[in-house]
Image (tube, rainbow, N blue to C red; front, top):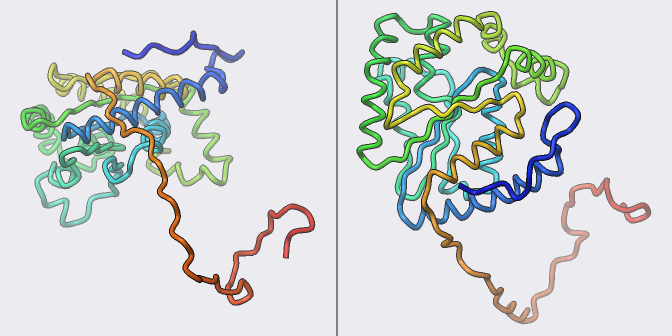
Length: 278
């Protein structure tokens, strides 16, 4: 496993300092790029499942993972409510459609485990459907792994107090308000029910071949770094990133003359230095 480049540095609230976090994040993201090149080189198929309570930090971690990866070969799966047609399909069918091909990474921002969590607690599935999921899920994941898919499952664990703080932050911020829904508010009222559902889910699906990796996430920065460290450590990869690229010389203009600027429509430059704005 990659060791931190230096001992962690914390602020007065016991959270990682931003300067340390940003430096460590950049180092780990560089390794993620190497890992993706290797996955492409070896035609590996990787599935990452991110689950946890609302506001537990899943989305931020996925964003930091994805922002440096080639989106052609690394995609985020965040499915909406199933359609009427999808409700009549085999339960896992809508997720199978998003599994990776050779050389690809699929990151599930919530997954088939919706049935063991929100659907169970909110009554969106029957007892029979829930019981069948608990029986079928380990078999489904075993089939994926036997077919060569590398499956890693992360559960983000957040305290009630920290979730409350994050919910309040989202309510107060216009740009974050879309992150909170009536379902999120209902989940807050059903904290204990979700806890029981999670415990049962772990009892059935925390298997030797597809274990759950728990991520304490009250400190979001630490959680992100820890997930990246763990993810990287699961692969015996090597650096196959192509070497430096040399730009070829630009072809001669061959008499080309750019069209006059007054014949084009420009976006207003409201941020030009003083005196330059047109």
